[in-house]
Length: 395
Ligand SMILES: *Cc1c(COP(=O)(O)O)cnc(C)c1O
Image (cartoon, rainbow, N blue to C red):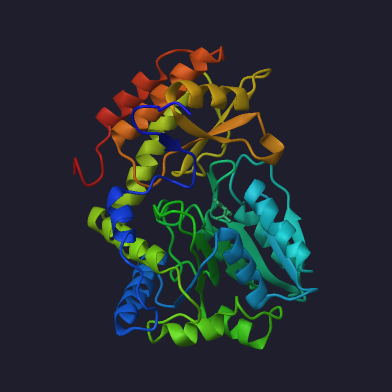
C-alpha cells in the first residue's frame, strides 16, 4: 500500500468520524468492572444516554451493533405468532421486518417507494381496521439510512392514539439519535433502538434500547424466550451502576465524553447543524442538476443525502473514483437501489469546511467519472452556508 497524505473523508452515514477527544477518552486503561470506580462510570453512562433519548425511563446498553439491539427490542416484547405493523421506508426497515419474520413474528408491511418516511395516515387506517387489537406493535424507522428520509414519530403516535389502538410504538433511531430530534417520553415511544457509530460519534460496538414502563410490563408478561438480551435483569443491576456481564468499558468512556461534547454544543444546536448541512448538500445536488432521492418535503434527513445517478451511470464506479482520487468514502446504494444511488453522510463530528471539502470531492469525482452534471454545486453550498446563520456560532 502506498501512503496517502491528508486525512480520509469518512462521509458514509455511519460509522461516522470519531472526534480525537473521544478517541483519547477511550484510550484509558480498562478497570475492574466490579469496582466502586466502575459504578461511577456506569451511572454516568446510563444517565447521560437518557438525556439524548429525552427519557426518564430505562435505557439498556448492550455490547453489540445496532442489529443486536433490534433483536433485543423484538424479543423482549413479542413472541412467535404475534402480529406487528411495519413500514417500508427502505432497506433498513426491510431488514428489521426480515428479522421479525425469522423470529416467527407475523409482520405486515405497509409498502413504500423508498422516497419518503412513514405516512402516519396509512398507519392509522391499518390500526382502525384491526378492530380486535391483534397488532401488538407498530415498528417505524426514524431515519432511514438507505434513503435519507425521516419518519414523523410524533404524527405516528397521534395516529395510534386517534385509532385508539393499544399497540406498542417501536422506533429504530439507530442513525437518527443525536443527529435528528428525538423525544422518547414526549412522543410516547415504547421501545427505541440505537447504536453507537452514527450520531453519537463513537466506533461501532454498543447499542441501546430505551424502554417505556408499558414495554417493560409487556416484557415481564411475555416476549420470546431469552437470557442474554433480557431487559429486566439488566435494568435491575444497572440501578447499582453495574452490568450483568463484562461491559464494553472503553466504549462507555467514549460515550460519556461524546455526550458531554453534544451538550457543550447544545443538543438543539446539533440538530440544527445537521439540518443546515443537509440543506446545503441538497442545494449542491440540485445545482449539479442531479436528483435527491427523498421526494417528500419535510421528510429530508439531516443525517445523509441520497443522490440519484443519471440513467446509464454506475454509482459504484463513481464512488470508486471518488475514493481513489480524493480519498473520500461515500455510501453505496443498498439492495433495491444498489449502484443507482450514492449517499453523502453529513452526520456527527463535522463542520462547514468538512462539508465543503466533502462536496468538493463529490463534484470533482463526478467530473473524473464522466457523470453528466452542471458545475458549481459547491459554490451554491458555500453561498448557502455563508448566508444561513450557523447555530451556536452566528447566533
Ligand atoms: C446502521 C443502521 C442499522 C444497522 O445497525 P448495525 O450497527 O450495522 O447493526 C439499522 N437501522 C438503521 C436505520 C441504521 O442506520
